[in-house]
Image (tube, rainbow, N blue to C red; front, side):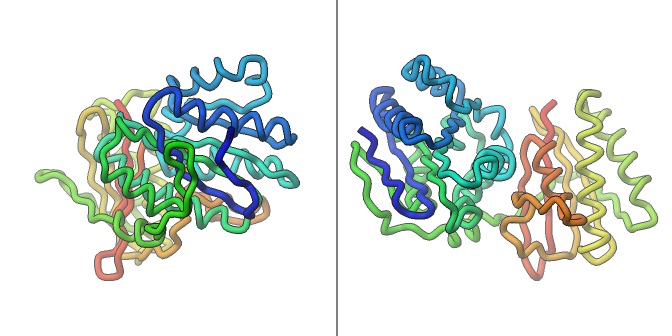
Length: 310
């Protein structure tokens, strides 16, 4: 039996599971209850867990939107606009149910801060929306600090089949805590740019990434991301900025820094209205990059790292 209540406008419980049995007990009834009520249901979890749910659902799986989160959500900044909002917004007059598992044991140290910020920002992105998003956490495979962060990013937590309010719930504090300074390695040469040099810097950066081993199939995406970030610097960051590129297996990483302040926590995760001009630059960066990390502070400006897998 599902322990998730869908009585509030927006529900965002964390599900702590210790084994396959607890995983299926916490997820499959949630899916089946949604289907029985006529609610649209999506499941975005790592491939192995996706296979478990699909097998348990049997023929009912064809009525569920199934996504491998290791692909759809490799960049945590992409999950809200391209997975969660994309599904919820396609059913505006109904109450969608979504299972989203953005944090798994294979997440890297570089990815984790972006994952926590994503989980915290779900609450802002969906406040007062008619939707339930259930987030499973592997209580045996993840570190205790990860589970502690889950209490801070989810208003309720399910453990051993029982759902309870989280006394540690403080999503804004987690967004701030993981707004961590970013740095380039020693020897990474900075390249300055202004409006007059944007095109030349973009082309040079793309050649640089190719020399570092970025496949030709990713170069267009890389160039697009660099173009969007450097243009944002010129328009919103004081008219100039600096760029660095280096390799760190398995990535080519590009840093863009400017004096601007990014004060919208949902920048790059909010879907702009169709008639809106602009406002899509950071969203495009999240869509094409394998990982995006951002640090922004009044005295330091904004530093963005974009990761492209080699």
